[in-house]
Length: 200
Image 1 (cartoon, rainbow, N blue to C red):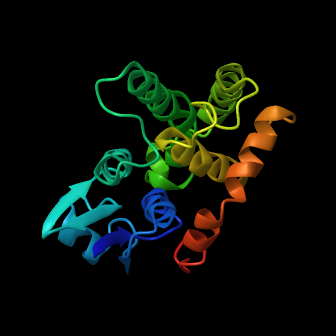
Image 2: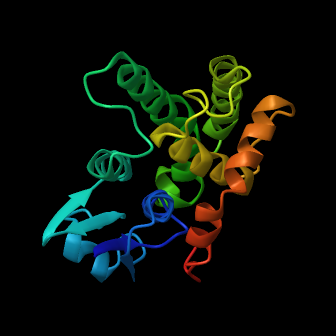
């Protein structure tokens, strides 16, 4: 059984969602970022961490792709052109979508107050809006970003869409919003969210 260290109000949701999609058994060890339990598994106190056969894997993107590869689901095979495109979408999500959200979060509540620059949040919203335009073009009329098959970047983008709504970033109407709604209605995501925590 896998063990996930983290809380669903964090990037750990990506890992729990993936495990639910894969229908794999796991234990969720509730550990907020920078808590004692988090430091037990990550030298920086970050979450999530995945414990596999007494080994620890960190970073949500690495964990989700590892699980997809290991179970040969929600991914294209390494070394294929389809996988290269899939990885480019993963990187796009991390750089352009999550990057804007994370910079805004750091300057809202993550960094100590004396190290925050609130004005940068306007730039983050601008960058997020540009990323949404680019994502809409890449999505086109497809059900998922890689076509008809859900893959790793859909989980990452789906998580970011929920994060964006919580942070009150503007979500464009139309096909992109419909795509986000499709992701939010996944039964696996609903099961993952039901694992919830009271920790923000």
